[in-house]
Image (tube, rainbow, N blue to C red; front, side, top):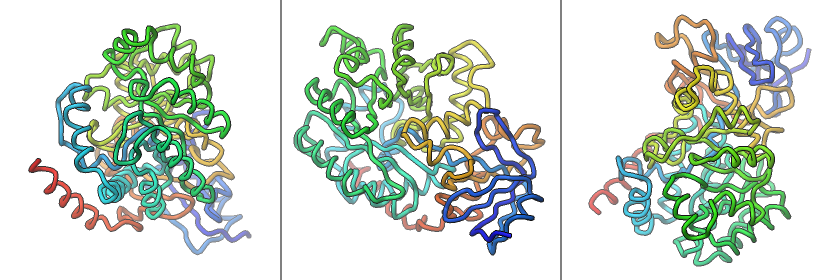
Length: 438
């Protein structure tokens, strides 16, 4: 018999595969942080021994959730400016607050709180776009969570950099410093077409090609954005990005609530990844991403929460339910974004968008053991006919009991193992007391 570091024995495993499989009475063997076996419990017990056997008789195991778009430190602005349209929220409230309050201490405190919230909700990897990405990377690694940190670029000066050249150089320096990290990767993150010039976007396109690096950008978020772009440039933002060489398989286009039929066809042809953020789009009244139509065209659709200042949470389980229900209304079809497909966009599709699907996103032999256990014995998820449906339509993040990243148990029976949760909350309250009087 082979000795392994851990064996997990849940009631169900939902691996997220092409067959839409749900395995009952299966187990997972983990060694050196990787999945070495997924098999029936009797077969697993006959082949493997471990000093750590976790029995979860009422639980479903799913791949770790991938939050494909967020601004993690902005949890400290949660609830600061609610019930406002996007441009008013951004230009009159968020940008002024950022100019006044964002510094390295803000980023550290916000990232720690965000990591605690995400781990508690089953998120094991997040794609971030914010200032001081070096601090976000440092704190995420300390917490043990997987992250892709954005090499942010904006045309105007901020607390992070004074001009595009400095933004890009600081991003590239960060990328070099993280080359040996097993948890943290990077992507190029120009904020949006309306905040980045043609020359800078063209340079980002060149760097993306040279480095084989993903590009993460807000685009077609609101009708006002598109209308303004047409007035100022003569073309819609997506067409402008296409002309500058950015519309390709490395592009992660966030929001995409304003799309024409020919644009959807172009996204499919160029293998662009679309990041859907339904709750933020709903709250800011930004528009509706045609999620079901994108999937029907073979476009890789991933899921993100956006920042907690516009969502107002980092709850990917809640986001899955909203995404599925929203898609059914937009497409006028109850079949749109079924439960298993929705689970896929929150896991494997997010990994694919980040170019990490060789490593995470499914419960598969050889992949990193990034796993989430949900207790489905709660009244809200009983009786259980189909665990995938229960997770998407009935479960809450409070039913997440255990989380593993690279085989390390970061949430154990409901308790975080790498983050001082009460300290994180206390620091967040200190920031509230500083920000609130302003």
